[in-house]
Image (cartoon, rainbow, N blue to C red; front, side, top):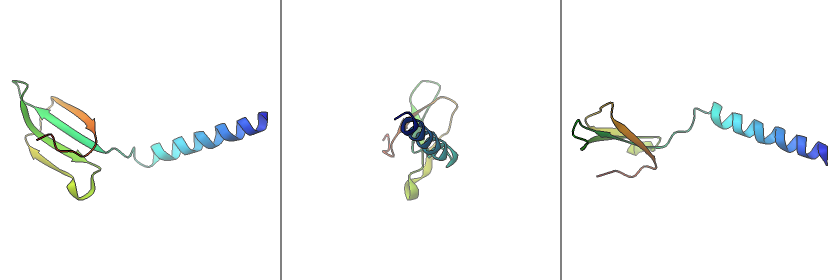
Length: 71
């Protein structure tokens, strides 16, 4: 039983490291805000043909998982 737990732990660690090695597989939407806190643009990443940047990119942003447009 102890050997089975060690093997399972090793397999889980190998799977986790291969996922992180694959580039992080980031998929989601960055929403950018202006100085007044209002929406000024967004960018999707990892969404295939829907990837792109719309509006203005600022240093004030939030990230949400998923490829839905915020507008």
